[in-house]
Length: 347
Image 1: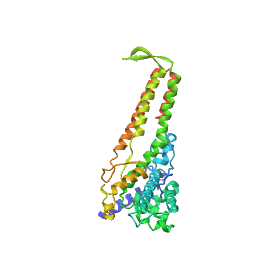
Image 2: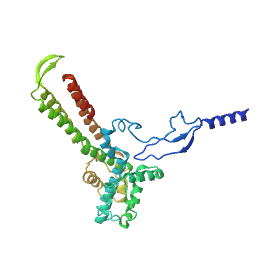
Image 3: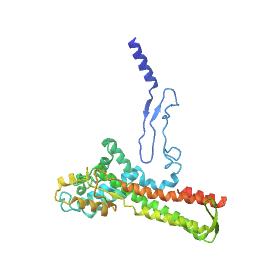
Image 4: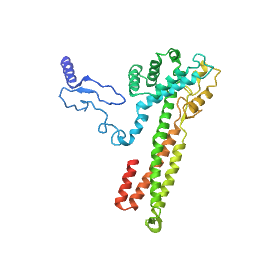
């Protein structure tokens, strides 16, 4: 009886188990499901019997899907490709920082040709480069280590650079690279995309405020008709509010750290105890990367600035919603629908 039960169980397991016939690689451009063939035929209850390329219809998030046309300028920045690109930038600039320090004689100063070649790695970083990093990661099982090995590959042909390749990632913990990479991504998105879009919205409403400066309208208080105002003045209220939030968003310091595994420069001081590593980190974060140095950290940068940044952006969008509702309620239907559609598109 026991043998019969074991045979029955094995047969049922074999019947229900899908047979994997091929799989596709996740890359920066294509997202695919595992291809599975079921014994029942083409229909698969798990809905995994097909491969899907990324498109507005197949995207998991509406950010890349329905609203992809609005967020397309952010793809090179906030995609995994963008993260890998900025990681490469941080690693390269850290090696260049070390090469500028006379105390680290094992690295020494680099020739202008070597410096230009290092800069070109991240400035000309391509999708193919990103795919190569992902390929290396399948071996390393570590995303930041894959970036380090990628850079060692890229400098292997140069005797000058390959001789100092072991100083890539010197004394760094992964979070030293990651927090600075995310900081660079946020700064790029803010300066190159978001602030420009915010200013476009403000300028558009400012233009309407001037255009309708003399158009009278009846105000309300406590839900009842009150004294008059002008359409332009009411729009100017929102221009002032939005401008304040734009300036606050622009003024948030994007902070970063480069202080090692627990924030105390332990590995740095173990190797070179006579160097003021706090000063080096401050110069690296502020001057080389253009961020703001956070001197008091643990393994991670505390990311308080991220909350400040997103809060300011959220306030800007909340004011836009307020503007949208006001225009919807006080304007004739044909005009208010146009304004509502415009603001919906921007938000």
